[in-house]
Amino acid sequence: MDAVDLLRPAFLLAAWTLVITTWMFVTRIPMMAKMKIDPQDARDTSKLNDLLPQEVQRVARNYNHLFEQPTLYYAVVIMIPMIGAVDEIHVACSWAFLGLRVVHSCVQATIDIVPIRFGLFLIAWLVLAVMILRALAGLF
Image (cartoon, rainbow, N blue to C red; front, side, top):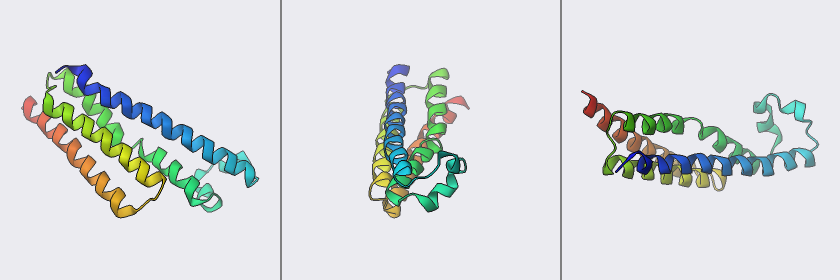
């Protein structure tokens, strides 16, 4: 196992973020035009919550979520190779995290059932915790 094996899922998650970004643009911008919402009125995006339909807002909320928990994941998968801790378990956790976040996105952007979303979020945190704790154990 080498760093590339660990980083492949991270790059795929970054690519997935591009997919969600595109989805957000192709739903939000046409809806704003259809509803005659001045782009300047969107400078405070929280105001869009009251103006745009939920099916448009769900995608935008997921876009924001891809810059929360995954940010720590990106840092962890960069640090693990730096301390020489790449192994099969870390690689498996990296792939699991990717899968969980993609499924989380699909749930949030479509049906948005909170208990399912929360379960996926929690499992992803557990996977990330395994990566962090295993790396820490190797350092001390």
